[in-house]
Image (cartoon, one colour):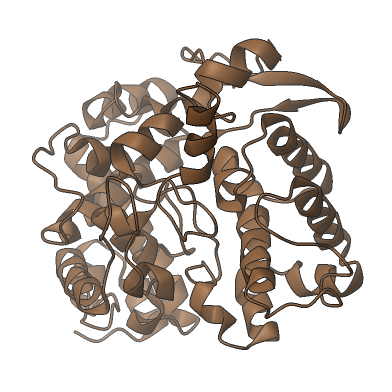
Length: 397
């Protein structure tokens, strides 16, 4: 409530080593912490409790009637960027316009956040796309002609601001290259730039280095809309090692993740369907939903039936993707996550090799009652009262 979702940024860096930096080349913001140490500081410049939240906060804009408002509405009076107000930046944006671009200047991160809001761009996708371009530029795969003369290097806030503007307006060579996100950009550029293109099913990933969070790696891979931390919402369970009915969860191991992720997805589908904030999931569990639903709708739905409803939601979503041609081949992860271990920090050496992902996929499909290709079976769909869906996708037994 006091600092917003960015409160655990420092913990993710120093305690878990799973904060993606420099287009996921690292799992903690090494350069920023080195600079802080040189200046006699313990915390980095984008850390809300110790730097920006108390200094810049002008108020709050919480969701209506929220009992644990996390909004941080800030006012920035910057010599470089002028005066502006913006809601946030949230944890994900501190990553996508901060760590993943290797920018440790709060005012620049907040300004990028402000511009993205004005342009109507998602901050996660926009930042990760620019990070890919920065790496391509530093590798020599993009020239100054390709970037319209921009020195597109990591840590260059001015370059990030200009790249964001060009992306929004599809302006120049760079804007046209980046406007459709990482997947399309890497396909257009070629030159093996796909090896550092961070996306799953075309969606750029959020601020969790899943090389060190194996359950979330599986969740990214199987999510129907690509790399998404909220479909399963299992990052808290994984990073802390326990939540609600789960205990002894080891984020560094790939075993026993199939049921864990399937269960989390089913439960989170209930949160989504009822409009319940997922930030309440550490104080509001499945047991509370029957009373909530009865109060709003008058319907008496028990816990077990609710979980079946969540399972139906996930199966319908998966069936839609199957009908559109998706299968096991699409439940994959970026090359960097599978082949490049985290080089330094608490999670040093961790990654998700293809064989480990395959094993997790087998476990997950089994927990779901799907085929080894990740296709919902006719038996499963009929069992959860979705016979029409089975016919629609031509599911076999």
